[in-house]
Image: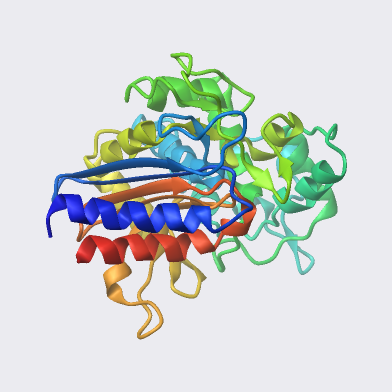
Length: 354
């Protein structure tokens, strides 16, 4: 198929999806394939104070977990940690003592860094209970450390470490605190030093924690929970932290993904560990170190969709399809697209095959 036809089909699909959903204020899509010489960067929606632009920085929600897991992998390759290290080696007793008591047995000392990375620590999720408090009171604030301590006091573990996948931001808050302990600097500073700067991601930053190297020409895209615009609610940053928080234009995100697939950030050997040390998270989905992986299911989930990447609660997605050699990145910036964005991605993959 000629590239122009391929592009027009994808563009028409995207714009139609956005235009028919009145909840969406702005949405973004980047599709890139060196195999077919395809590059498409789109923005659509009625906008806020101005029309959406493809160069806008976009908050990517839990897509940031892949950045966090790669940071941890970089530190592993520098000899600063091992994936098998216990978290008690890096975190103080106030955080770790009694953090995991399950069926009257204390597993707190058994949690390894790898358990945090692939969501098998068994720890409960602190994000949504605290997010509910934030929505009820926009002045609510809690630091990442306080969010972990709150979970320790108020929530119960779900499983023995290493036995079962349970998606939780608590795991990634702990990873962020480990990164800060090892590096002796704030998480956002480590992100800039080890990922943003080396990749010239000059328009990328952490929500409310940092600023981009170059001032963006366009305003940060709004992201929404129902009718509430979350961007300016400062308490949200403490709940998100290393569990998300990355704000970047689509082209910067493509830079990150290409560096990952080209093994310029971490070695192929380390990346294979991140992919292969995985757990079954949901039907049709495995979870590696911050990496969602499509697991084909006969009839329900065909092998043609086999790909990997990361998803965010705002309808954000950042995936790579190895067979098509295609990157599919974007966001609908509204929580109602948290699952619908997956079906949309699969439709893009179908268009790329035609």
